[in-house]
Structures are given as C-alpha cells and as structure tokens.
Image 1 (cartoon, one colour):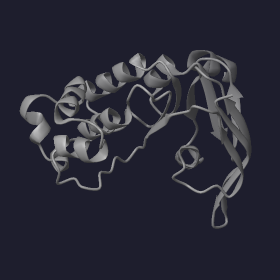
Image 2 (image 1 turned 90 degrees about the horizontal axis):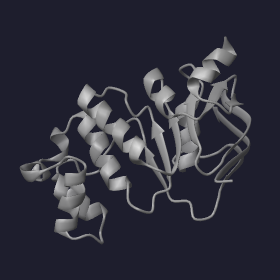
Image 3 (image 1 turned 180 degrees about the vertical axis):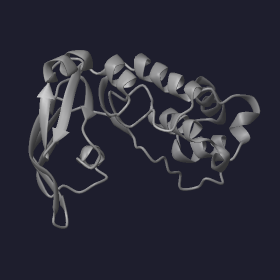
Image 4 (image 1 turned 90 degrees about the vertical axis):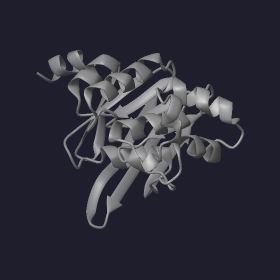
Length: 209
C-alpha cells in the first residue's frame, strides 16, 4: 500500500468537511477525485501533502515514497527572481547548465530563463512549478485541478507531462476529458466521505446511471 487513510476527519469551526474517511492508494493507481464544490477535495489533498493539519485519524505513507504536489494556486516566495535564479535557489545542488537544460525540457528556452517569475501566465507558473517538483525520484504525483484556467497549449503540455509520468497519480479535477483520459479509479467525495469506484470514468458514469 502506497498510501492509507484511516478514519480521517476534518472540520472548519462547526462545519465538518470530512469524517471517518477510509481509503487506500496502491502503487500504480491513477485516481481521479471528483465531487461537488465545497466537499473537501482540496482539503483532502492538502492533508495528504502535509500542508493542512489533520483533526482526527491517520495518514500512512509507504516506504520510499517521494511525493510531489502541484496545488491549484501556484505561489513563489520570490517572484522577482528570474526563472534560472529560482531554479538555482530552490534546487541547491544543480549547476546553471543543468538548470537551463531542465527548464528547456519544460519549454523555457533561450532568453526565457532570464524572465522574472512575476510576468509568467498561469500555465507557465504551473509548468515552472512542475519543472521544479519533478525529478527522477518522484514516484507519487498529486495534482489539484491541473487544467484549471489554462490556455489550450498549456493544457496539452500538462496532459503530455502527466502521460509521460509512470508513477502513482492522485488528482482532483472537474475536467471530464482529463479524468476520462487518466483515471483508472474514481474517488467520489460526498457527505464527508469517499466512495471508491475501481474503474475508469466512463464506467463510473455508467454505474452511476
């Protein structure tokens, strides 16, 4: 088991978002989390990624898990820095040439690398954050609405990057095309808990119908 959720609970004040959530992720799973707005999808991802405290229950990660989390809102602490400097500051053990090669692989080429992070579009910010997160070690990718607010070129690029990733995938999305393309399992979040459908999105929709 790569990830296990046991009796997970989370409230904000009087509002109980998640209660007694039990679910597991196996290696190689590609799980799409769906549900209405406000059902706690992002909260669940934040708890798994360790950026939101757990009120009750346990989250267990298996050994040798290297997770990368791409949140919905991409934030850089020093947006005034150039793309190249951002890479060099955050990935301390790489050379400028290696940083430029990495950036080029994520379609930041030539003079692009000297641009300030503050001028990047939403799609470019996602691409830069993914470039910094992804390395050979990453085997568990967590994405929150990865295609939201992206233009067509950026969407296609993100889809290709996810296609090329051969580890375990856990993502929240409202994008039916994206879910249909990548999910081999569906977690439906409603009434504070997860209903697990071990099937692709088309089969899930047929089962619900």
